[in-house]
Image 1 (spheres, helix red, strand yellow):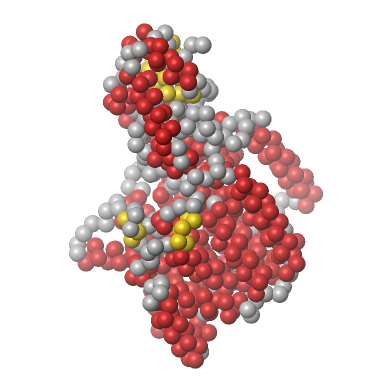
Image 2 (tube, rainbow, N blue to C red):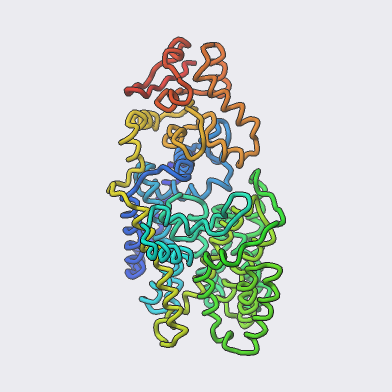
Length: 591
């Protein structure tokens, strides 16, 4: 059954259940939470309307996956960049959520992408606020949610004041630089994203979609541990969804729950059943994954302490603030200082992380569940100093983002004290909070400097390549493998497969080799595409088209630029011209 029909069928069932419930119990809603969701959603919809273009970074890839899912008749969906191949669930499950939002909104995919992108921070803020509202009154719960999801790092504050003092403009790269703070010997810098950057950068990636799912896991677990055993069993499917969305986030959350199982005594049997059931489901899914790049290595380099503080300094300070009462104990503080200095000589960041591990573990033994969030974050950060999955850049990227959420959401429960109790220490913490807002205040306008006032992700193509835009609209409701130019990743070349959902012979080879580990086959496909566009031998061209079961051949400006393609050759070989708009022409293979 096609994905669209299946989705709307399931949605209809849920709507019917909701209607029955409302008829019996009346329509009740938490207006405060709904209003917050609407405000945050409207804010990010407005930002996307300023620059709605689905182009740059990895937006093409995200859009291609969503379109492939929307066109899918069975799962797994087709790989849009490797004709005949299927997408691995490790890479595409998060995009199912994007496809679902697109269908709910009844929008075109290139509009649905931007709507889906705005829902992620809105849901994240909603869940965070509802969690913090258990400990804080409304205004402080909002401030805490801002700190968790919208705050920036210390590097951004340093860069801002450096430019200010040196009379330099805050350029476009200000929004980017704060996410390339920690050096990496292989790639130059590790990726160090944090939630707000991910939201405004607007690549619809798994690590972004996992943010609200992670927060929901934490919220439900807290309710389970403190109030309702029944709620805990919702974690079984939710942990499975988190793993399918982003296994990196799952590993940290599973570590968190397992630690609680080992060191506390409440609801042990229930928690053991929840974790073991989730683990079995996850293992079954993992065995179906074929990820060519997920190899485990021992780390050969250590994170620079200064660079670590530039990224995590404010958040680490707030984590320490959570344990302020314990730190005030002189004897304990001296012991922690000795441990931290000792650990520095083995792992530099241990100077600031090791004391937090001891503080959080000690408080966790007293059944303070929020301290377990900080414990799991610190252990995950330290694990990235010893072990590497795939590459150090990616390991730091994925583990640090989840750790950011865990560190800040626990610390945010104490944010009221900073503003309510007047002393020098709290003044410093308040200053750090203000510094954390420099990034969102100044990075947002430099990222969204345009004013398109549209949600159509193809606005850029309407203005620069209108012929391609019309060709894409003609191909959208048609099925079949398309042939288009192959060039570098992150480029415009894969525009047809990206926005129609029809697979092409090969595109984004730098990613495909990462996904499949089949460099030799990719080179062969790239050469075959070149031959299709350049060969004068009709027999060879037809055989190559038959080899890949290609149905449509696109000849546009990109094919002419890269290959010097000529439409005369395809006409001579008996292909039928089925679309023409100025310089973009589509031929169909007649069988």
